[in-house]
Image 1 (cartoon, rainbow, N blue to C red):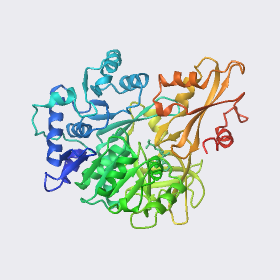
Image 2: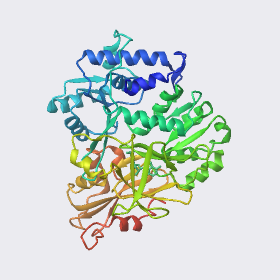
Image 3: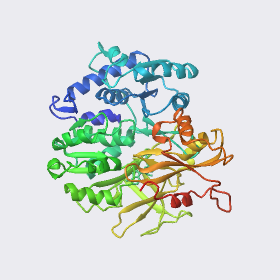
Image 4: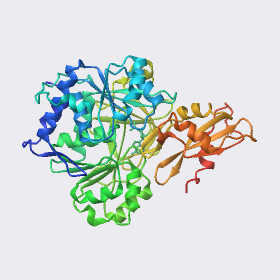
Length: 505
Ligand code: AMP
């Protein structure tokens, strides 16, 4: 049996190949037959360039149906797909190219020169372009390629995708996700969410992250169903398309933005079966307001890049605000104290998970991988959790120093290192503060060298913008004479968060 996840998808394609896979917000239609042809063409032409099984294909492009075909072509040919956030700057991309050593980069035409510069330092052989309209040298290279392709034979443990997640050290780590991980998680979600072929997913998430790429697209592919494909979340477009959809997936920010629309109401949601939220905590207030406004109870689920989805509230049982539900089929979850002793009930501890969904390890970082697993094979998520009386899990915090802003993870260390380089700044701390729209707003606390010569917020922010993706750039700079520290000299971020928790009210 071929464990290539593309083969698994293919088994679930609809009986009629003319059924629609993607309908864009502009009304362009792509059938399952078209999917198979485009995927074969891309797989052929990349193979003809010399890209081989196991080679990395790094992709930094705007969302379009052609990116989905490129992703599927990489899976089908056994290449390792490596999606990159479109917000990354040259300094960030330099690291990924050096670390992942891709055989090919596919990028927006405007970034070709940048990748040539970066690539020449790190021996990158091939660069192809793909623009937001699905045009570019990638597509022209495929024009005459065959529309038949023999799917590469893969084992469960073969790497399908590398997704970079940042770390406390500030250095991103590549999570190696296998064909088997994707299949196991896809099956668990189909079952838990009662996915049906008739489902129509309204897809407005970015596709360089597990949420938009795996959770959203894989459910559609495994259901043989259709998605309404929106290039970027825009509340007005969502309202226009909602009546044609049955499932919507979003980060909490999407839900607060829908609630900000005066004309968002129950009648737009008459065909909707499920509103799903994840990637960041959904506020109880948003959960309640949403129910009041449109009659739907948002289903919250929890997962992460390294593990895929771990838990979900049920489709056919109570969905509880402030909880992420129970472990998915095939996922073992446990909550432990600092001595690795099992906790029950409302005691807060670290959440650990084990199952076929859990990734293979970090790319070229065996020691870091070993550190993040227990001796009996559980992955230490770094999230703090507890059970309620019904056995549902709540994520109550993180013991990793991470901020989640608008659904994107921001690792303070990376920003603090850059802040400390700004002339006039002695030291700094990055914290996340509660924000209705972003969930958490990235906020910087700085200690100037000299209180009479403090660099301005504008100066600091414009310097950071040169190297950091914009979602990581602090939204405000707070100036203090010193940072609160404990007796061990460790910065007390908890105190800072407490002191400024109403900053964005
Ligand atoms: P990522 O790897 O970008 O998907 O981020 C994973 C992290 O997002 C998790 O470790 C959690 O800290 C957080 N996360 C994801 N879903 C939820 C949720 N429903 N509630 C709270 N935190 C979440």
